Image (tube, rainbow, N blue to C red; front, side, top):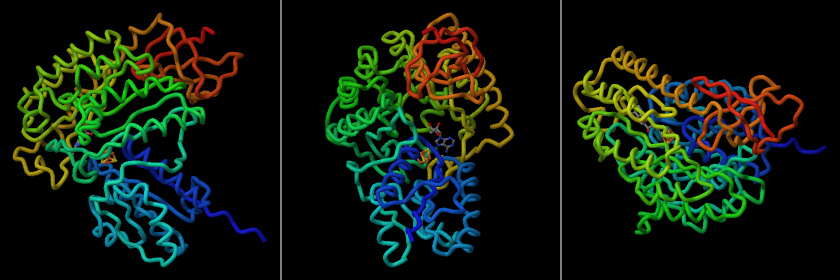
Length: 442
Ligand code: 5AD
Ligand code: SF4
């Protein structure tokens, strides 16, 4: 009789860095002989990779971990691992609250998962692996990527900024960069497997290499990655407006494969709120950076993150946020209601803004941004753009893909056959808030 193949189920929440970490967990599980399943009820190992950036995320994840209680009761042999930012933040407290969880894997242990799991299977002694001083940053192993053509490439881990609202520096530790050689080797290997589009990831990519004491290391890395044969598109995120240098903007302007999209979170328009957020720039400085970007890359798509309702935010402060949104004309924006994160300085600030006020501001902000998105998309109508095909949209006979600047494009397949990751030229003819439609021209 052949032995039953062991299976794993990964449940991911949060940002791109978490998606990337999840690909590393998948790789290590497959090295151990596990096969993926999408239903956690039938898996031998379940990993929940968690986020704690906002309370709403934590609540949703706590609900999911709760659901796993019944799974453990039914099958005590199942291994339940909670990984990522919430595991890091709550540690033993989380284990006490959810006794069905066997292992907690903090954010510094991503690439030690295989060892941790092997040790657990040997003695069934679980626990919390949440030491943040385990500063691994290089990676040699195999990961299982979600997409067949687009790859996440973490270039640095952690954050030194301590924006007063943000929990990330507490759960991801101090900045540490991967070496150029290790990054380039991973990209070259991915190119050999057919990958074309690369997103360089870090909480603050503009700080890349500062821990090696190197000036302009990120701009140099961009130029180095641009020269790797087979790399077609390069993106990077997230940038910090304070640290984004002219050299980086120049690299984007001059390098063929670096895409013309800039994700530069400004968070708030009021310079006083920015000061209290510890962001290190004023409204004027931010707008000057946007001017610099537009000067070098006139067709750039600029996107951002915005928080409404930071403690003490007045109606006048919020108007400053709307003013920045109006002036910059972002292609798209991620908009958030401020969420109190205990342990951060902003959680202890007076004048927390009531939820109904925050919601009302968010609605006004989203309405304004939607007008901007539509206008940016309307400006694309009549142009022929290069789209990387992602696959069929909700309708099987209409395909979806993205422009170099990240805009979602839909086009009818008619009698043609497309492959995922294929470059398609599309003549755009109709704009909507979230996407642009067109027809393939070759
Ligand atoms: N509340 C709301 N939004 C937050 N972000 C980070 N911390 C908080 C918080 N406490 C947002 C920021 C950041 C994005 C990833 O999440 O806008 O850029
Ligand atoms: Fe969530 Fe931030 Fe952690 Fe990413 S780094 S998973 S957004 S808390």
